Amino acid sequence: MANRRDPHSGLHSEHGARRGEHTGRAANPIVKVRDQAWLEFEKPDLRRAEVFAHAFGFTTSLRTADELHLRGTDPGAPCVLIRRGTRSRFLGPAFQAADPKDVLRLAEATGATAAPLPEPLGGVGVDLEDPSALRVRVVSGTDLLPALPSQEPLTWNVARGAARTNAMQRPPRVPAKVRRLGHVVLQTTRYRRTLDWYLEHLGMIVSDFLYYPGQRDRGPVMSFIRCDQGSMPTDHHTLAITLGPSDRYVHSAYQVGDLDALAAGGEHLLDLGYQRSWGIGRHIQGSQIFDYWRDPDGFLVEHFSDGDLFDHTLEPGWAPMTASGLAQWGPPATKDFLGVKPGRESLRELKAVFTALREDNEFDLNRLRGLMKVATT
Image 1 (cartoon, rainbow, N blue to C red):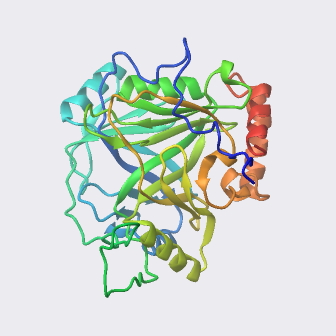
Image 2: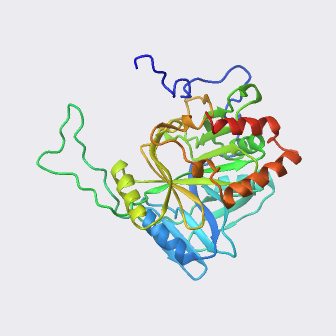
Image 3: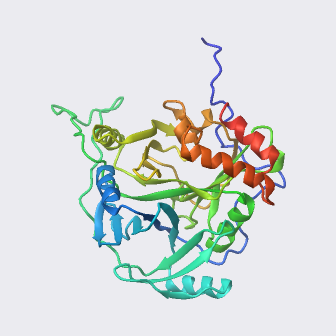
């Protein structure tokens, strides 16, 4: 047993770039966004979406016949905007600019038009399009929702430190209160062009690159990207982009108070009959404790806690992309999480593979072989 090899050996990405590899940042970006503002969706059944959202830990900040706004307990904008539509689809992310002048600068540089946002959001915004044809909204000056009561982390007795005496831990099975939106993960057939677009237009910087095993010389296929606020630490990633056979939403993540809130909230979701996709575990890139769920419309959403924070001085790490390298501990990544569980979603992705291989993009036959290898390593 003493000679047993650590399966995560070599998967941590503290190792930096080689000469000539991507630097992970743009030399002269147009603006530098400071955070993600919200995500926008269309769904046909707002009532069903709201019931799940409350069980997941959101609070409704706006409800009309055709629109639903969901917020966390932290002050700021809503986390999620859902509009009534004929089918379920992801419309795109919104990012928070530091100043309305940045919105105008982006509009001028791209030929887009800046315009006031509707009530009750307030502020000004500009709609752009990334190389995957996804609408990306950049906003500033939006109205701030006040803070709500949140779940405070429990007091732990740890080695050599007893902070709690004559008191017991009894976290209730209740929704894990969402504090804020953490990140969104997107898949694209034009990974390198899309990555560079976000770095050049929004001033984001890469925390970690992943490459397919045996294909590092062809460049990375996934990047975890953070906002650049100089010496102020920010989330390890606010956006992650991965190469794949289709342009689509992968998942979004929402911070909760601590491990107990996450775990007890998961038991609450199970009690209500909702589907856990994968968890509980701790990631490698970003270090978050995670728990993934499927909402009733099939979207993958994540509770997370205890993520890494980096300032602008940290250079990108590089590591191979493998299924076993997705977590430091926890159950193996599930077929549902990896997108290979038999069903409509996997069938749709399989059809996308054949389409992508016939088109002019970055997802070629060698990349397909690399992606298939990921699931078995």
